[in-house]
Length: 155
Image (cartoon, rainbow, N blue to C red; front, side, top):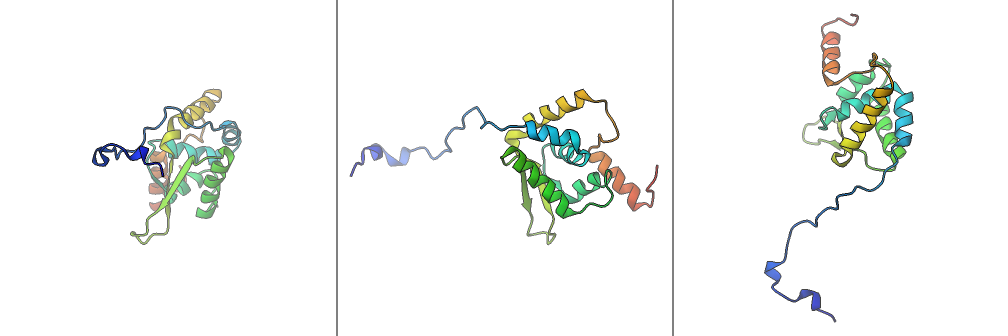
């Protein structure tokens, strides 16, 4: 047996994580670009996710998506997000579900490693077209929820 790698003081060994390399694995964002340009629901959902890079509930994503298509459910949102991951063959969008709250709704976020490249992709798409009615953010989703809960559904 070769114990040469164990020479030295074992108590002084580093217990830190190995340093990450500065470059990310290559991900082809071109299919995602085409999908976002052609589908306003996916575009709105992704814009909401990259707004601050934090966790976003399925309910928030539903509010934004329902501004484009009134009949859409949580399963469709999950399918859209998983489909985006498959398009880029990566874990672009992460999910988690809280078992402690008793609510069976997931939260979603953009992988922090891919937040800036995704923002740049959306900025590039936005430069090619003028700001239209599909430019909604989390604040727009909250306002839409307030209008709906107060009975105001039309402007």
